[in-house]
Amino acid sequence: MDTPDISTSRRTLLKGGSAAIAAAFGAPIAALASRAAEAACQAAPASSLSVSPYGPIAPVNDLSTGLPILQLPPGFTYKTYGWRGDLMSDGLVTPAAHDGMGVARARKVGRSTEIVLVRNHEQSTGSASSIIGAGRADVAKHDTGATGTSYQLGGTTNIVWRDGEFIESYASFGGTNRNCAGGVSNWGSWLTNEETLTNAVSSTGKRHGYIFEVPADTSEQSANANPIVDMGRMNHEASALDVDTGYWYLTEDQGNANTLYRFIPNNLSGGLNSLHQGGRLQGLKVRNSPYHDLRHPTLCQEFAIEWVDIANPDLDSGSLSTVRGSVNASGPYRQAYANGAATFGAGEGCWVANGVVYFTDKAVSASTPTRAGRIWALDLATNTLKAIFVSNDLQVGNSPDNICVSPRGGLLFNEDGGTNGPNSGPAVTAQRLMALRGDGSSYIFAANNYDFTAAELAAAGKGGPGRATGNQRNTEWCGSCFSPDGRVLFANLQSPGITVAISGPWAKGTL
Image 1 (cartoon, rainbow, N blue to C red):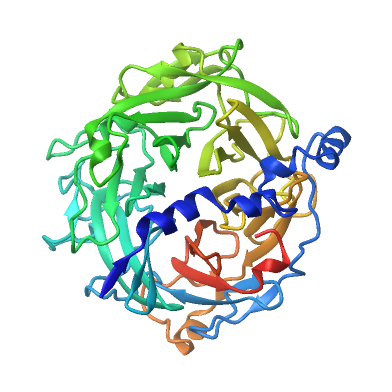
Image 2: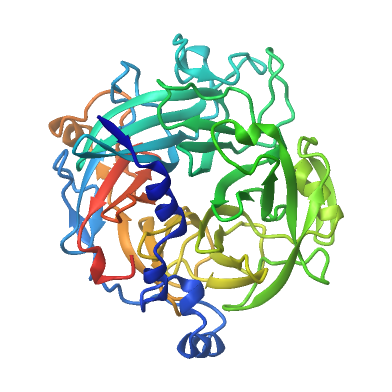
């Protein structure tokens, strides 16, 4: 007998553990209130790199293939699954460009514990035959028409993990463009977000730049092929739900022309398709300081904030004159800015835990002085925004992208910086999973170690067309999320297109 356990497990995962927050290895917003943290902020305007409590990382062989794909601390192991080009359980080929991912459902199935992950694929355009779920009526699709001569190749796949093993995977949604990040609901679904500013209309009358909802089990109910229009049309990144209010917080990856958004649904009861009933979209504004530039804060700097309304979430993108010059901006940001909204560098990951919205702001080439990324914490009880991580050095943090908070209250961010960002020290030769301490410093938890020949891949059972060969260490991490019990960290390596499940002695550190 299947015994759903969605509400309890999802609520625990979304809120984090209160006991963990209060502990020494608690969430950064709590730890940063300590005298030691405030002293660290006064001593330095930016974050530093600290020693990992888990120990130094080194290459570790994958339990699935035997290849040393990751570098991890002592005692940690991992399995890989859903490589780009692998056949899925539905007979379709695993798409490329693995990106954002979340635990959409956790439940008991008999005596087993089952987790369903929904994984984004940040594919853009190509041939009709490459649409996710092409030729399959059971896979919902937003747009099967052509824009010019190209079709939309983005979408999602669902993965089932049961009792420590990957069990199955299948296509769950298609016909979208550049599904980057997203966010989980607490009713058993994933919001998958398009990252595009195009105003083009396809041959079927469809447009892009929206958010869609994908259920944990599309055999029970297909994904709704219609967008959640009131959540805005923009260069979407992440979505995060505050389970206490039912409000959603959204980031946008449009360099130097974005803010943090809040969506207040008309239907706050939740449930599949409830967000399609509309709502109110708002942008973040620094109180008494219109058009505030938040790209260059110092560590622990705080701002009082408020929200401004966005009248037309579906407004076209276009040129916008700002105090920083002319920028190309989404329709929602154009309206938010007209009402005094603040500006970040490039919004990326977003997560809500215990009444705090954590979100990342990665490096962008147009920003000066040099910056390698920021992490912010917005206390929803006080409407206070605080810079809890400020990196001006690639070694400290190289363009924080996706972010997650573990059930124990630890904060982890995924790097997406390559080697092209600002750098005041030695070159970063591999993208990493980084953890944040309460004093605003970071430490290395894992690194991408993918560098294999076609022969090495074939010997490991991963040969064939479409496999990435050579040094892929500088390609981004994405989609990090923990199992509700905190025992397994799931994540993606985008360019080779691999999903990993990492286990080990988490209690030794902050995660």
